[in-house]
Image 1 (cartoon, helix red, strand yellow):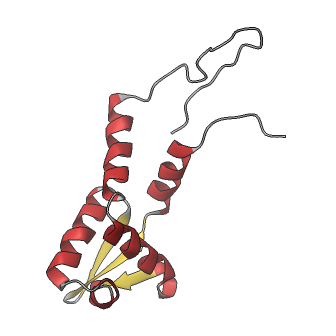
Image 2 (image 1 turned 60 degrees about the vertical axis):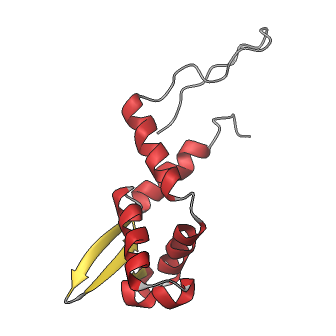
Length: 117
């Protein structure tokens, strides 16, 4: 999601952002950042990104964060609901991968559109 910007050279204090995101876009971005607002979930994303093939089994995520499998599963559900990870069931274990599109959209939401030289 990118926000259109305009800058008038002769005007002072003209807002750079001339259009707000839609309500739907704002809600989606807020859900992502809310999910990222917990340090355990940030750590889980980092562990998944560092995993072999960019994925991790739920069984491999509990020990590094020092939480029970049930608590880690709850955190992973919130990350999946926010679209930050995808889940694949393999037998009795769930494997998670980062959703690159959502991660890129979150990064884009933080970028300030500015002329680059």
